[in-house]
Amino acid sequence: MSQSGIINTSSGPVPPSVATSYVTDNGTAVPSANVLEVVAIDVTDNNANGILVEGGLVETGASNRVQVQLSNRITGTATTTDGVTPVTLYTFPLGATPGTYLFTQSVVGFNSTDQIGAVYSGFRGVRTTGAAGVLINTNIALVGEEGSFTVAEVANSISGNDAVLTVTGVAGKTIDWNVVTTYVFVG
Image (cartoon, rainbow, N blue to C red; front, side, top):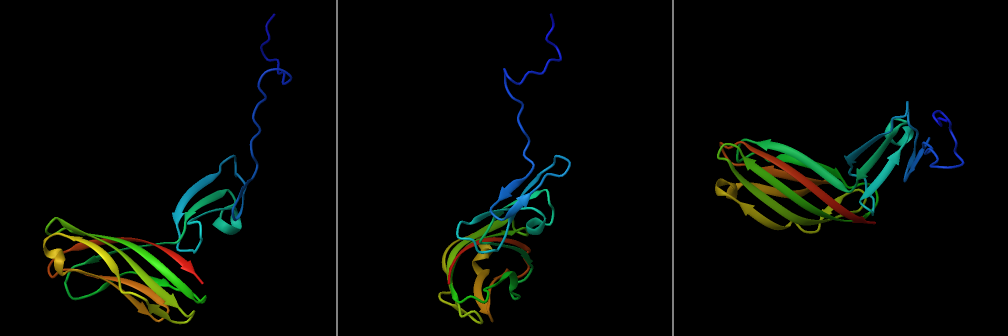
């Protein structure tokens, strides 16, 4: 006798149940047509863990989306074509809460004119009163430069209550720049 078509859940494996909501650190995502989107993004938001998971309409803009956020990150890109004009890689608002930041920067440059590169890794301390920023130190850096990059410049500064990172290139050279900065804040 054939057992085909008989469903018996008292013996054998029980079919899995499908989740209807996903609770995150910040919000709940609900699949739409059995689809749940999971995306990863960089954010400048301050989070002591460096990572945050958000879900649902209020947090992500879509009820069926979960965002895995790498927080405390600032990124920027720029291209320079001369050795005179500083170009901003990023401007980071320090916020209204008085406190101290430690920024860890990784900057890379590629001179496409001469096919050479440079790397800059640095630490920068900044304090804010909540209304004005104060540069504690300009930069503690490790530098690796090829050829004409020795006249290029990576500079940290404060403008009002913003931390600013600029680069100045080399005359007659097209240089592409990229930075990833992470930070720690206490206030």
